[in-house]
Length: 242
Image (tube, rainbow, N blue to C red; front, side):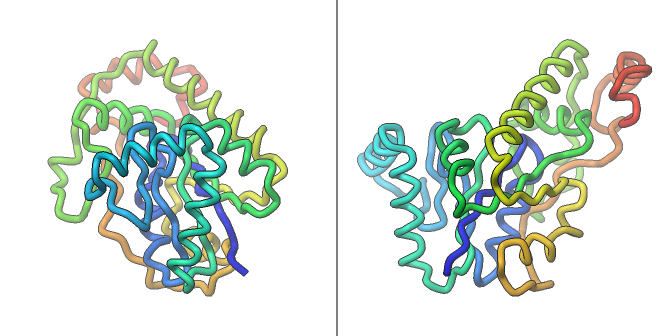
């Protein structure tokens, strides 16, 4: 019997890294962002190779019946990849409320919930990705390329963290009845065996990916104005992350 799962990820928490690691297991198929607003990232098709008409049809069908689209896609995947005993997809909290609720109501899904402990580095990662349009990193990227600094703005940071809290509350509320495994970005490597056991596959120590964590873990390396950040966040709830 195939175990369905959903990789629910907070923004900038290493979802590309984890989902590609899982896909290197012979018994796991984890689709990418099936509910990305502009595209459908499936393990069955390469989005950029589809015709314009096919893309338009798929996006329209998904918009009209998102649950039907998901179930049809997973069924097609199961038939095409009969070796998979764990079948899932990646979902961000802002992708589709209806799909999040569908997963929450279903007893079939196990949920891997990917979070990040350090909101300062999470903020830096998000703002860096937005200003450079680099959302992932592969092995050949140099360290210099990965250290794109951003400028800290206290109001912007507080707004960003508030949005993260809203997403987290939504996820925990909707998925409270699911069997859920929470994994932190900082401990992805150490959690791989536990995740595989959670998904019901034979654990392997040989999971591999070309993806890599993108940035330094020293927050001072991530900002153009680290002293301003330190002054602003000292004596606040975020001081522990400095």
